[in-house]
Length: 303
Image (tube, rainbow, N blue to C red; front, side):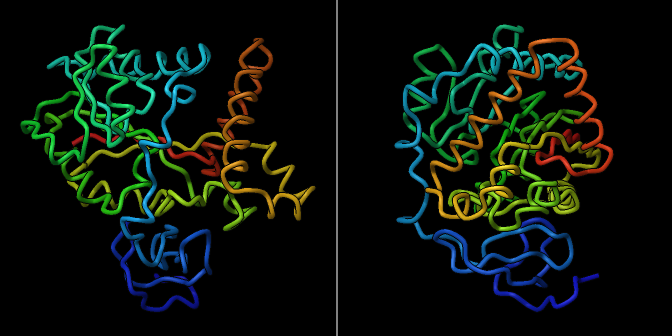
């Protein structure tokens, strides 16, 4: 059922395809944000033109093309969870950025490949010896059923046409293969408390999916077995937003996003330093999973 006060809107929801939504107001360069009346996904009413699109060549520098030892260890753990899908021994990441996942996969014996729109990041990966393609996934020309695993971490929220990309992922995965993805949760605790002021509602995010929205998207692309978890919350951002509201709302956008990412990384690293802290983190994440209030949706989707 559509949400109360929903009305027909110009652009359909990128999650479920509904044309019923509630106008939320402007944000950053976007004139209007819409909340879908059917699945709750938040999305921009009008897609940006080419001149307003994010310049990812300028985004990637020597600073963010490297990751800390803590992040690399965490990535190694994630890739270790894909071992049960190994048949062709081929794994691919879309939007590989720093290449941390590719490095972890190669160390664990995978033939790891990647697709990335940033020429800077692509050249960096090639220097490390990886087989990578610079451009759109559809242009890469992979054969059907080629990969065991496709990774799309923090990617779907950036795509103008996520259904087209997810459908292509389904084509290049072998039957029974895995799409592993992460994307922000618009129904998470931070989004519920901060609304459009959540820094994840950022200039390069064209939509933030709900769990219902991402599930419908995946089913439309041909995935039949979909499992979702929600994890993570940044209490530092919530505390700053609620205690220092005016300062938080007037902060420079890029600086605020950087502060959120850095504080989240530092907090996770601090929680990993002792067994009691790790136990606390595990307990909190379990509560966020059960309540579906985690700020990040983790996706395991099989054909």
